[in-house]
Image (cartoon, rainbow, N blue to C red):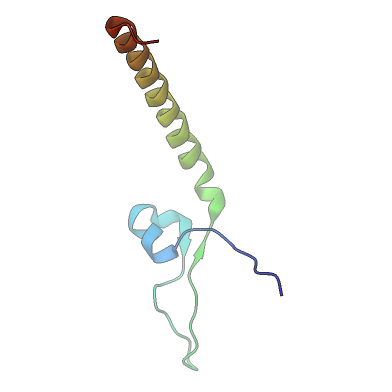
Length: 77
């Protein structure tokens, strides 16, 4: 049997930061005592995560420029 790993968000943790992407109620159960699981609408996260990546990339580029400037000042290649 081959193990298949899946990656994602834990709905009730995501709900604290971005509730519009989460459906359902944490620890909800139906009339028979069975769990009603929360869900994550990943399409709600695409724009948010893309913007975060773009902002991080700007930070990385700025830091790389600063590092290169400092290396030049110190005579390090």
